[in-house]
Length: 151
Image (cartoon, rainbow, N blue to C red):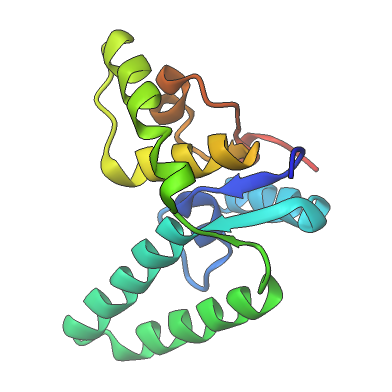
């Protein structure tokens, strides 16, 4: 499976409706990058879970219209990539030890969600597409920042 890109949550969510925390030019750059690499895009189940949790939190906060829009968008994304959702399985999980060790030796603390994305990428031979390069670099994971690239 070498040669593909695993989208971190921040990259995937840049395509969501009404994502105001990302400046428009950066969001457009990420969207163009995703379109240019569409056949090589993979989604970590971790990002799906983080986005689903965000939708649930919005519903719980009474922001139901936006939650419905996001849920519709997530369904569309999943239907566009039905075979490209990468699970956090035992093979991926066993990469946690060397990746956490590398991060620790680099003086970095890595959150569990980022660790699972890194494990999936390492197990599947994928490059992580993320805006948070600093979160993955200490683990020695290959990364690309679609927000700063054009195509």
